[in-house]
Image (tube, rainbow, N blue to C red; front, side, top):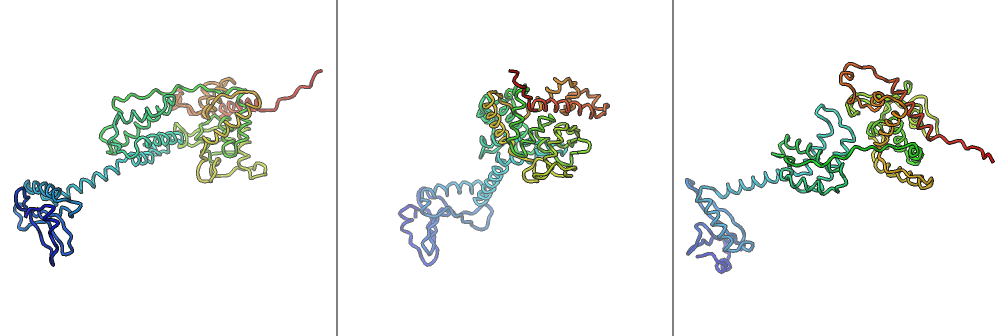
Length: 427
């Protein structure tokens, strides 16, 4: 009889499972209801594929969640598959496989997952050399922003408009951040394209944001003593590192990554290996008396004078003896607070500044002390700005000239921070 709610409700269980097959107007061939001995009722479609010797029975679903009309409609869909030569079981298997592939693609191409994989690969360059800490720091900052914008999205579903929106989400005044997001995002998508996570990148016809203007902040001779004294209020490892940044003019990552095995106390030279410099070339930094004194204090045990010999290995600036000190930004904020307190007390003003400004200040200071442009460039390891032929054939190390420049700069800093003589009242 026709399968309707009335006939389904009236079907009673028997000692063995039995079937009620659909008949009458609008009936679907092979559509039926199976009633188990326990009373469970399920809709089925029984069919035989062309050339097959036996029927197959496909369970549509249980009565209750499925109504007779819904089950009949589903049976009609299955019957159309059979009539076109497609076995419903094979169709389901293909659908399940497609869903599995889709789930895998969603997982493999999830933006957060891809971004993390890229960050891991970005730690070393194409030549297998470790990238600079500053570059990795910016890359991580950019990825944090992009993850917040694309959480739960597949990277191959992110288009040009999506990426533009991610940049527009950054305040217009944060020019450096907007530029970094574009630059590092483009590097990420290039890697994703080469890794076959995407077939195209969203950067075609996407205009890069304006780059930040070159900074020109230089700390003057009234600001330097205030900052120097304020570093004394910032505990190890940050206070000493800040002072060495100023005295040597080297990069933040190079100073905070300083190792004892790079130091030669007898020669008063710090040799930064090529895997820690921006240009990948080893760089010898002569150590002024002030820097030697700072390092000597770091080598000493608490309440003991500086030792005759420095440690043979390990990080100079570390809080766990395993990795270079982290939390530099928070330490800089503490230094800024100390500077603000000092300027309030002295009635002076120190305009906002960054740690990298210490490097610019050192170079500018050496220029003011009549150090030649070539030597000051070599002190800062800016050899890319030198004559290419000189870089290839001029292999003189300029160590004495660099030492004279850094000694002159340290003497100038010392003169600024030295206590001033108080003149007797002539009255």
